[in-house]
Amino acid sequence: MAALRAVGAHPSVTFVANPDEEIGSPFSTPLIQDLAPRHDAVLVLECARANGDIVSARKGIADYEVALTGRAAHAGVEPEKGRSAILAAAQQILDLQALNGRWPSVTLNTGVIHGGTRPNVVAASCDYQLDLRAATATEFDAAAGEVERIVSSPPLDGVSATLKRAAYHPPMERSPAAARLAALAIEVAEEIGFELHDASTGGASDANTTAALGVPTLDGLGPVGGDDHSADEWLDLSSVVPRITLLAGLILRVGEAL
Image (cartoon, rainbow, N blue to C red; front, side, top):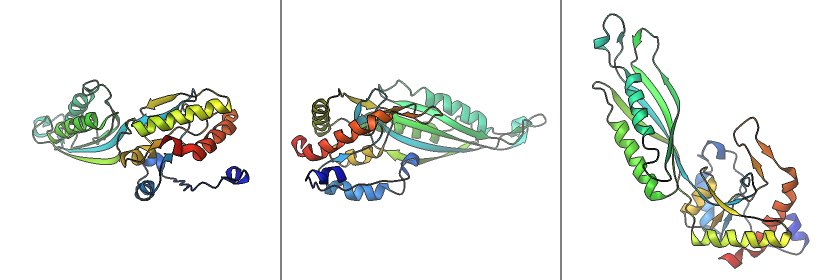
């Protein structure tokens, strides 16, 4: 913004820096939902893809927490009196895993599971967490309905289950407005002197929230980086200045894409 002012440009910009994005933006989402519709466009500064691509489409994501309750019993003396929450969870997880591929863009992963107390006790409880993603609202809703159906009907008599959706970002489907913003970004990058391409990705961001409100949104405008969420996560420092220049050019010319 200082650079824009230095050359006599005074665009009207609201800058939002939220510290809770990595946990799903539970506290900042209401603020973002309030601010976004008051603006012509939203430019999101998530890192570019490892090859420099910007992002105009993202999968939607829901995190689910499942809790199963069975009945404890001595596994060696009276196993027939028990109702294993772990066994029920295992069968449910296999059924949930089978949803992968039923719709072209749907992925589902069970990443956390806890249950039982001792090897010689039929487990009275088991909890697991799963991640559901899809590129379109239609496929997301269909898959979410199947998740709810599978969880609500435990495969063993005497075992009950509860389902909680802990986090949610709607799909960011590529809209005509986002496509125009991407085309403008590619044009600005060419004028600066580097090649730029548009992409879709399976990860969610706050761009999902603003795009779902119908506000033209473009993401991946930050520096180039990769290996997210790993010990090898990296950032290409040489990309910082070109990406800042790209952002400034977009801010100045965003009206051309609207």
